[in-house]
Image 1: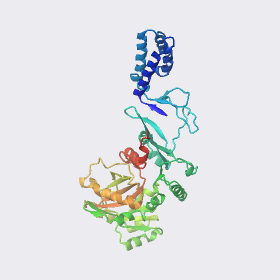
Image 2: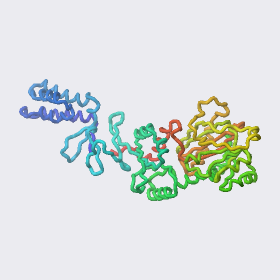
Image 3: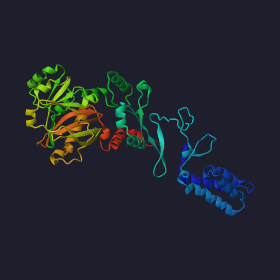
Image 4: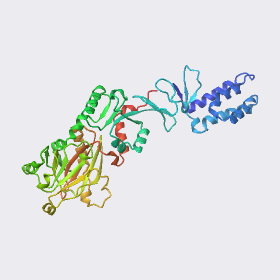
Length: 449
């Protein structure tokens, strides 16, 4: 398929006009010129009759000049839609057509009717006219997503989908009622579903489609869904440098028998109050529920299996560190209030806090103590994120970090979440689409020729 830029098409018509002028006078050259040009000049019958009126006076030199001027005007000075390049179909008798007149075609070669879906396969491309009016080829990155309905609603917001389309990214829902291998083809699979059967389907797909990037490997996700092992990678880092020290709170895993919890806590040497979290962090609302136990008696009211963590006073503010590939974004969130010694001596109860770290209330604009509000040093977060990406094998996760009250350079990682609520992260649309494009750099090269 040959493509001619606007200046070439104008030259084409000048040459055609010269050929017609050189023909014998008895030949209806202007009538021929009219039939050649009329499909692009206007759909108005009135203008066509006017044009034909000029063409019939072919012995008049001034009429010749007018026809040439009008032809050049509609190719060089007319509205933008007439200035697109031409498409010529070699070997076909069909006339030349403007690129905007070309219909979409389905895989069988037929034209797609209005309202009918258009499917772009892997490695297919769509024509794009750049700022200079010249066409280029932009690859489409197809992202298949398998998310819960709630996650789909919070993540695939209209602004994200619009920006993705402009950048050549197409989100396609994965049909759970059909084999995954029969769908696509996909360049990236974005998923956050649980269940042994789904993990096996995804693992089989990864093995049979090594060219597809799966975000993220099911085994790596499963590892941090168990709070018994979730923070182990942080503890193994022993990250301590000039920018600060990163550690985890002391914790105890209790799998059954709530009546034995006080004795287990005493034996482990944990100091009250204790934060109780469900052992499994599967993304459900229940997995985010927290309990704060003040005394030994209240510990017996807890429901195993769970993890008990020592509570660290932190000024009531936590730092949510979102990680998207190599990108890092930090926001402040309100957290549990500090606990004083008098509260411990007068209270032996248990308090429940649903989804504290997921609260939408931002602390970024709150009137906070500057020491409490100060973000962790950027170099420290970059080093931490880099190490955890490598050790966990994940690219989409976040960290809940607190700073110990009264100690400016001591930080605790208290939770890790896979594929968190990115919809609450500022500018997540640009960060996430750039990340997806970085996974398929080869798809953004112009076609040769």
